[in-house]
Length: 107
Image (cartoon, rainbow, N blue to C red; front, side):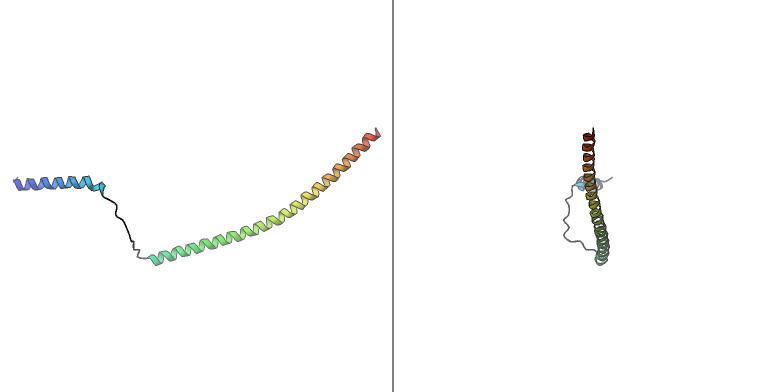
């Protein structure tokens, strides 16, 4: 081989080595603007999905409100039953005490 070709190969090898060393050392590029070709279609899809989700939320809230109203009504009935049971137990307690007093007096 002749001398100029060897020098040229050496230069190229050094350049390749330098490029390989600096390959992972590049700095990040700051992106200031991104253009999307079909942004109107994407926005429409997002808007449609958002409306569907909102409608689903409204439906769930409406059903929950109905269920809550039913539970409140049922609890009013349960409270009335508890009050009636307490009154009955109180009456039975008095009758039992009276019966015990009478029993002890008869002895």
